[in-house]
Length: 312
Image: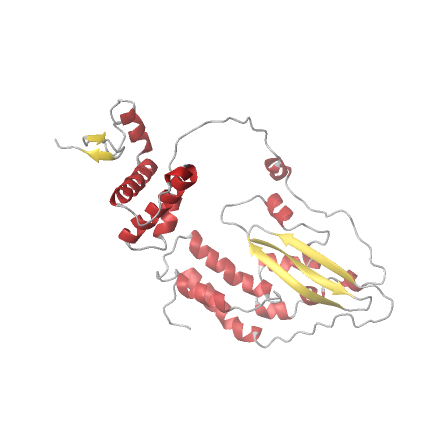
């Protein structure tokens, strides 16, 4: 794909083509996911050409894809049918970029096999490393002996192929004298831990009036016909009225006054979401604040509670 036009959409499209359900190539594929996350951090548009640094990194990753397709895996499970117990070991790790875990199974022989590996990118809203470690449920294996360390940092496909810790786990995993160290040996900054402590809050109850516009937004996302939109909202209001006052028995087609009532209600919802303070001031008999965008206009509230602009 060298020399071709590439955008954020191209990166997402290729990322979606990756098929690695068991996560065996996660240290390699996580690099692509981090690259895609970088395009969001820079607020790139869908069809905007990739910046030079991202473009070159992306091309470098693509050059390694052919090697990834040549990898073959041997995953022998439970070869030892004797009395030796089978064990599942889960390794986890976190970095400021990603967090995840690796699962290995042993059957008492000198080998171990991968079951499934999972990795997630760290959120764009930065979290402390202490929080990320908790999200990864940090185990006792650290650094070079922890296979999960690979998926949080990313590896080239050539390094990954030769990485025995990733494919088979640390040497002690197949040791006949397996023992565990309960100390994680983690060097987490005490300030990070303090930041994660639960803070005390004083509950304060307030009652406010606020029209939710997400109902309107959800409808508009699936309906592009205004007449149909008003008709649906009219039926919703009719249903609500029948639930509150069953004796009213409002059935049948939507009437003209019901359509007008629904339309006025929608207008009020939208206005409350955008000019809440201005409407409050006008209802209290005050003038609109000078800081308001409407301060230069002769605004008022009509008999239907709708904000309008009068003449000079």
